[in-house]
Image (cartoon, rainbow, N blue to C red; front, side):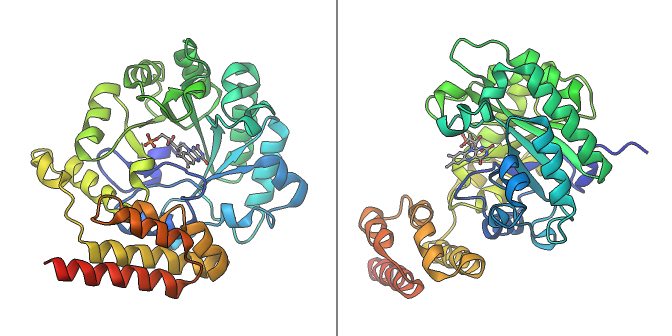
Length: 346
Ligand SMILES: Cc1cc2nc3c(=O)[nH]c(=O)nc-3n(C[C@H](O)[C@H](O)[C@H](O)COP(=O)(O)O)c2cc1C
């Protein structure tokens, strides 16, 4: 029997995913997001070449999965050579810690110069024949292990690039079982507004109903999530930056999707208390300490912690203090002081 991507999920309605983000999408945070309603969360990008050259150990941390904790699992790979992807998929599927992965996602959207100059990431938008071979060969290998193959890309490479719809159609024809489109071109990086109209045009060119389509870019809560689906015709949405330090966003979007008549403004309202934010921050920190130890976890959390406290009174002073912290205890003290001040204000 033919298996399609959406069969992996038990949910009705649009799926809500955490967009892969280097530095944020660690296994701990993906688990937290899943506990808060997120359906799917690929790992951050890992080099297929590195897996081929060094085995899984060197990049294990970035590919680490937790099928019990995060639901459907997905490892994202980047590269420029079809055989690297096939070989990397084979190596991962034969590693006992990673063999339960459900999906491989190919990155065709990364705009970072270090990646683009090798012909990988978003550079593949400019070489559609190579991109097609990467998809078809990877799909063949993934399928031989019972895994799915998906692609994440952008609306084009440069500002005036109108190849997006053709590229989307090629991805589906070459064997991608789901396609995610971020509504910016590579030259835009992360600036400007995501162009949902361009996403719609790419969506329209994927006519096979078995190929799942994710819309991505500038979804910030329930109303923009609904709008993304309405405007683009996407099957599901991926949330990137608005989910940093904000795992609660998934539940509110899911509720809005499930409850068609719900008053959007009521679920949009930020009803998470400061104490809940502090608890969640510590929860993520503790999970990361379990992954990489206290020193590295606290250091890596310096770019994550400001997202948890965004918008609270005194956030900038607190952010500066958190960014200097080097132990779990220091972080806890900074949060406790803030909670004490908050109590004083009440
Ligand atoms: C810090 C950061 C790291 C990212 N890393 C990845 C990555 O590893 N793989 C990927 O496909 N996209 C990556 N992205 C892009 C996001 O997945 C997403 O497509 C983009 O942020 C647009 O969604 P948003 O407007 O909801 O943030 C990254 C984005 C950011 C901000």
